[in-house]
Picture 1 (tube, one colour):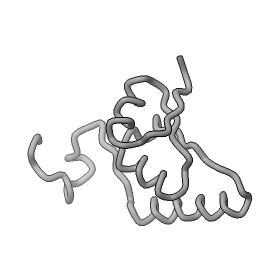
Picture 2 (cartoon, helix red, strand yellow):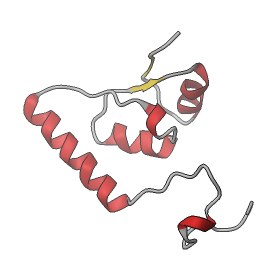
Picture 3 (cartoon, helix red, strand yellow):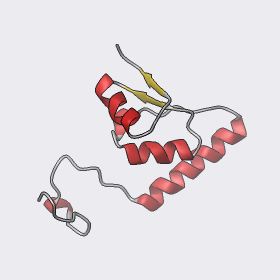
Picture 4 (cartoon, helix red, strand yellow):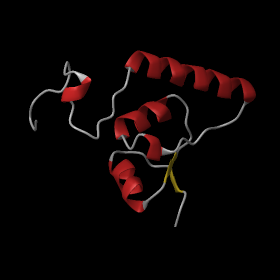
Length: 92
C-alpha cells in the first residue's frame, strides 16, 4: 500500500498497526482537558507512548501541555526531531 492514499479505506483494508482517530472527538477531548486544567490551575505532561505521533504531540502542546513523557530514547528522539523541546524520559 506504500504511496497509496489511506483515507477512505475500510478498517479491514488498513495496514497494521494503524492509528485511527476521529479528529472531531479528539479535538473536543483536548479542549475539555485544557479547560479543566485551567480551572484547577495545574499542568499536564501527556505520555507519548499511547500515540507515538508527533502531530498529536504538537496538538497536545498547543492545547497547553507543558511537555511530553516518553518511555524510550527512541520515542524521545522522534519527538525532539519533530520540534517538541520539553521531553521527560520516564524510564532509564
